[in-house]
Figure 1 (tube, helix red, strand yellow):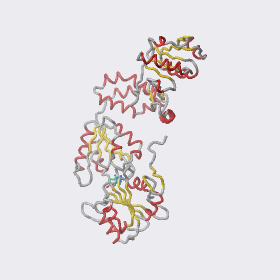
Figure 2: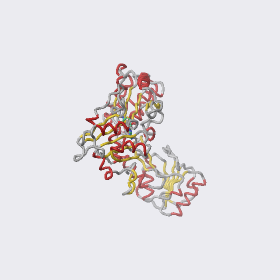
Figure 3: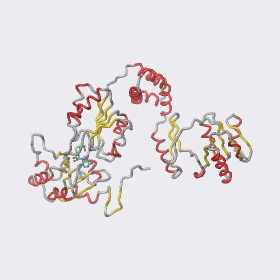
Figure 4: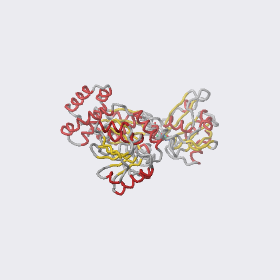
Length: 472
Ligand code: SAH
């Protein structure tokens, strides 16, 4: 970290500005907004400075800069159009250990001004440490666009209630829950609609009411692995949860996005290795929620597609534990897209089936005839262990040996691998490339287009393409 971002309280504190042209004017405006007691040294003053002096906002000293002008100031800004003067301001401040900014001259700065998004009292400061100011400005524009204007009044309103809430609710966890309820409530909409008195009344009512200690469960699909495929809602709930209960399919970059102080509980390991029994997971969710926690049950893909999501929700019902379900991009959709396979296509496939390669507990086989119909795409989850059996059953049921197939390992992730061939080679592909879990099998005519539509990762005929992590 090249700079420490801090927010300095400048109200009534003496700040020296050297220079009074148009560059200095911008800095003066920012400093005055922050309430600084401004002294300006210059040989010539733009009209605005004269006005500020008349309004008692700034003291003007008509003089060439001299080192002693710095004495008694907490910050100094050099903004003249003369490099030599700016340099001497920097040196004079620096030997006195007073922070100094020389406008547009980063080496001669001991502090820099960030790009600011002002929703006072909420402030966001962005800096590229002087390396890419245009990029910083673009980021600011993006953030400006997504941050609602009512953030400021909202923060002001809750700020006025902080002491009351502290008196009424004991403990950090309880208070955090209370504030989260506030930000989820209609109070936000009232502030947005500028009905501040209604919002204030609602806030008071909420505080008077009994604060429920019951927790809740969010069953959240995290998609196949690329964190950018998370939904906004998933991200929001991952940030709200006290505890995140996840299994092995949830990728590491996604876990990085969980609220920093949330407890993380892993309940699943790779196939074959020990994993927590489903019943234990169910019980864990219930007991965490009953102890008042907000529990995010984070699952790979979509929670209701081979995710046992329904089982985990069913156990909550007898306890009356509130829950929400957030869909995720299921592996079939995510892996197919990132491998360049259109699951349906007017010329090749009019239907798509998602099936599990795991046999049912009672050993009953799936309907291989139906899975082998032409002009449909078959996506097999959890098919690695049974790949030979799957290949053989599809062939026996009449699927052509030449039908194209794809095996996608770690789909949508940086280490995604895709292997294609024909149905007669399916098990071989898996063995030859030592394909590991998680992997998906896709069988059907549409796979023939994969060579053309493939876009993610290395392509022999094109420069490597990766999705832009953040398009700015
Ligand atoms: N609920 C999940 C599926 C869970 S079953 C979903 O909707 O995607 C686990 C199986 O999903 C794995 O065995 C594998 O077949 C498939 N899978 C999940 N993520 C995958 C990924 N990133 N790449 C390839 N296959 C994946």
